[in-house]
Each structure stands twice: as structure tokens, then as C-alpha cells.
Amino acid sequence: MGSDPHQVIENELDPGEKLLWSGQPRRGIVFRGTDVFRIPVSLLWAGFAIFWEAAVLWGGHHAQSKVPFFFALWGVPFILVGLYMIFGRFLVDAAQRENTYYGLTDRRATIVFGLFGDQPRGFAILVYMLAGVAWRRTKAIDLRTLTDIEMTESSDGSGTINLGPRPANYWWNTGELPGLGKQADVS
Image (cartoon, rainbow, N blue to C red; front, side, top):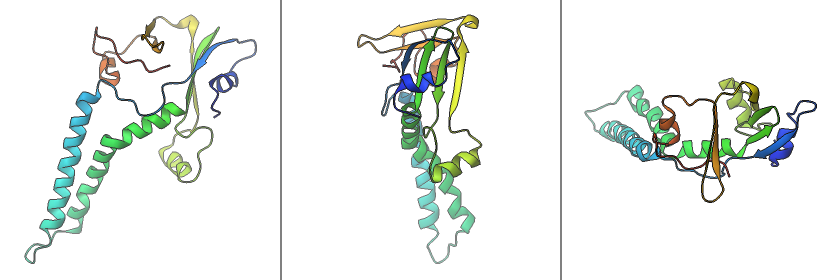
């Protein structure tokens, strides 16, 4: 994908459709309200997994104690998940937002997204093939059938536009506590 949101969205337009607005989410590492809960849980998870693995590996080096190879490997996936929860999720989120483009036309709202942009390269191709994921996706919402539209604007001019009704657990995924608002994602 290109770096110009206007051009990326224009490539998705139907004949006669007019682009009214285009943009991208905020770039870089973003902390959300739910991280107040997720960060401590991820630290506990990873800490316990590392403790488990260390106890198995170093506890098994005594002459009387032989640890089976399976036990030595058992903690590795838990450590990797813990590291992803601590660091990786922020990097993946930043990469996804880097390659996400929003557009609003006279007919629909359009989102174009993909983790690695237009065409993955190297190892990313293998990951995408194994995961069965397309490297570029487009989602469009017809404005004529849309029931709920909500806009929240911050003092700096950034804001969030919600299209459609929110699911009951919306606050858990976004950090917006019911009735208290949230940090804006689009600038």
C-alpha cells in the first residue's frame, strides 16, 4: 500500500463515487485504558513462565535429578506468549495501524488494512500462507444501511468515529469505560 491515504482509498472507489475524507490511525506505540489490566497480567504470566522454565532447567542439573526433554521444552511456548503479551502486541498493533487506511465517500465508509502493506516479503509470506491470511483486506460499510454513527472529538482535533452499534464488551477491547469516554485513535 502507499503512504498516502487519499490514493489508497481512491483505488477502492466505484465509478461515480466521491471521496469526502481519508485518513489513518495514530502511528507508533499506543497505550489504551485496558493496558492498566493487561500489563500486570502479562508480567505475571511471563514471570511465572520464566520461573517455571528456570526451575526445570537449573533444577534438573543435579546428579540425582534428570529432567525429561519434554519438561525442558514445556515452558518455552508459555514464555513466548508472555513476551508477546508484554512487547509483541504493541509492535503488531503499531504495524497494523501503520498499514490501515480509512475513507468516507458519499456512499460508504471504507477500511483498507494489512499487517505488512501491499505485498509481504521474505518470512512474512510464509507466515501469511501458514496462517491463511490475505495480506491486504478491504472492508466497506454502506452508509444507507448504517443505523448508529457516533463521533467523539478531543481538544487536539483528533477523535473517533464509531459506525454501527457497539458490542456489549466494547469497553474491554478499547479501554473506554461505560460513560467515561476513551482516548481517541484517529488524528
